[in-house]
Image (cartoon, rainbow, N blue to C red; front, side, top):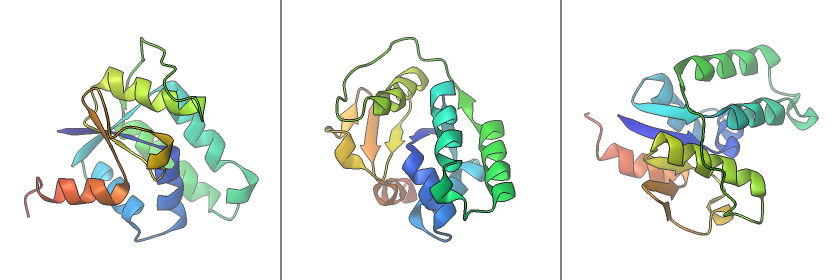
Length: 141
């Protein structure tokens, strides 16, 4: 099965924009068409970002259920090799560390410009739309 790492902006967009491309990516995870790979650092970032005041308009119970569901379905990894590849936002290195440890097929981000390369080891770095285009060719109808 396809393994993915999701940048936090994909989760935020999925919650803020129902029926959006990021929400469709999340639905593939919930439907077990893809495996979400996370580490403690990434999941902590998900929780921290979604608790920020600017997202208080979101239904707190919905956010908690959403995170709980992701938590329960995720493949949890413990990265063994710290990386310092991305200098513009060093926290983005946590996503690469997770992808490396999980041997993820894709790192999906709404900010591909934060990752100055299209591939990191075996992991392709793509936008949600690019991921859906690629995955549509692989999934049975």
